[in-house]
Image 1 (tube, rainbow, N blue to C red):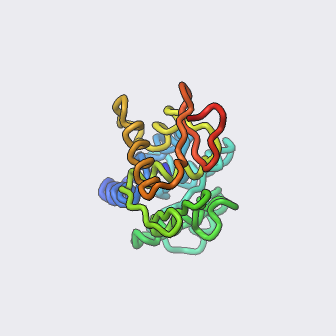
Image 2 (image 1 turned 90 degrees about the vertical axis):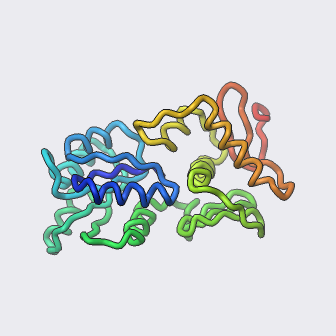
Length: 229
């Protein structure tokens, strides 16, 4: 997933960013409410982790503004406050869930999975395309009965492809979804990851699930379309 973290505690923001990145997610960080709202309006994020107490504009106001602008990205709100009224205020302004500080990182990940779960493809916390499965909790990938060992970045690539199975996925789509906003990709990096995934997914001689569409991008799935090779 691509996640926006809006948190003015630089140390906490870095801990969350590193933890999510190690799990294979792409993470952008902003440290004040105005910058966070601007990033959320301009970026295609799967989820937003939003602190309540922020410089310039508090998290409640940011969430309310995003919902008023019909931006429906799931929001997990963080706060050091612990009253019921604060929780209700967060949910009323458009947050999907509310997590109190201090928190265990595994709980933050579980809450993010919960608010971003997509039906029906992610029912039971699993993605499945043909004989390929990915457990979204453990990040374990299997092809048939065979485990497929992947790095965190390879897993992120595969998750994006599985969520967009059957659709044309272009290079700009991959760059936007799988790299941080301030990081540039080299000219052949996407091709390198695609070759790695093809090799690992077909290591036991299985049919390829990744198909190159000449001059356009890639299509993922068991059936090769006429415009793919």
